[in-house]
Length: 267
Image (tube, rainbow, N blue to C red):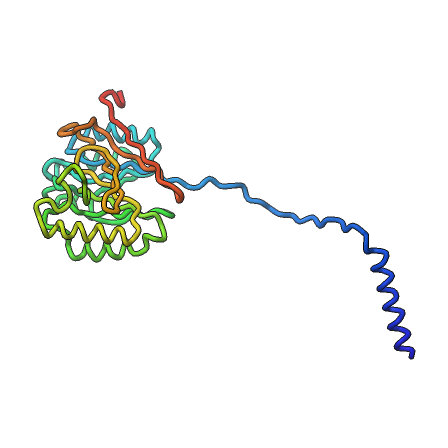
């Protein structure tokens, strides 16, 4: 009976407490939340230049404009010279070194001696990676097509391109509606390799191809591939004035800008 009495007292006390507090408004609980300031998405700015053809003064002007545009990197997309001789290649390399801008390059069909190119500039193909961006620099300048080593390398390098933004960089475009001067021109074997590369890029999720060779700037989508022709630094054989292309790349978008090199640039 004593136990029952104790339980009865406890139950009564609890009931009375709930009765007097049932309409009581609870004070809000303050939670200290530290909100980080919103960070602007990182952007990477790259200038793509092609078809210099040993015109060092025009290249210097282009680099001055690239500096004014505050680019992070310059990529030369082949035909740096007319014949690929060591002297001409060295002249181009000296201009690039003196500019103080980070740069990379691939050879073009006018780099007749691949040995000379490799001696002066290093590897004829390679990869540049930074954060969310990957540039796959491909050598498609040789009339005989790709080496087995480069084919295997491309397959490996493109295997993770669905996880980041990947751009393929090469001298000759894969295709074009208005010109036959594309990869595989005059060679069935190389044309088949170009088709293989097109399929590989589509399946890998390559965002776009950056190419030169045709001496004008244009952007088009054909057969599942977006191609930016970047223009030419040389003034010879151009249907347009000398120019190059800048891409400003973030995780969310790619902005394209074509920059003309005027004769009075740098004066």
